Length: 70
Image: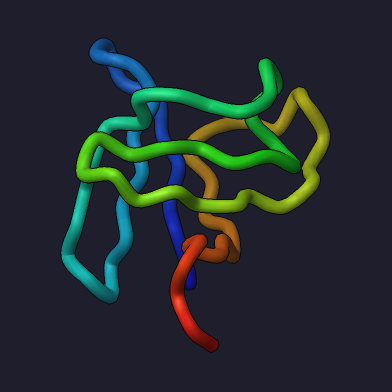
């Protein structure tokens, strides 16, 4: 699914346009964010693609929701 990752004064958040959902990112598997999983405040766990650590935000990526059937 397409997910926009952005930085605000409150921290990182993820916006899923198809679901009209924006949630704060409450934890991340890797320090540099990319190539690991992030957990949203609503409990969703998203696997993010590998990208360079210096990738500028906001950015839209293809992420996969864990536990979701294809």
